[in-house]
Length: 169
Image (cartoon, rainbow, N blue to C red; front, top):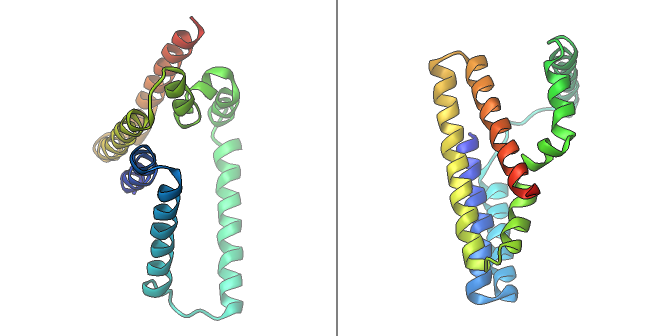
């Protein structure tokens, strides 16, 4: 699921940056508007949800929200200190550096990359993220999901510290 999302982000994000470098902003904006409109029309015209009465739809939504908030409460407060510590860690500077999407384009501009190079780096990083999602799903199915999550979290922390040290010095 997330692998396909990453591929779509790569086409839309890196593709629009590459177009901007080749044909300029105005034409790229028009092309992206046409593609997004086409996407919306295809969704509206061809995806049909089953007919549901409004009263039962509201009841289903209410049940889904209650279930979601119950699972959220259990996940954060019934699973020990881990989820809360992860939340605290994510707002610390090292956790902020781990948010590559927020810093990637800024770092690329600071290094003097042009639009075509930024598009290439963005596309490669997103495709690698898609591969990572698929690998993580495969390993999660093959081994313990908990062990795989711990392994990838340790890798992320290591990489975040490396990036923060490189940016600091």
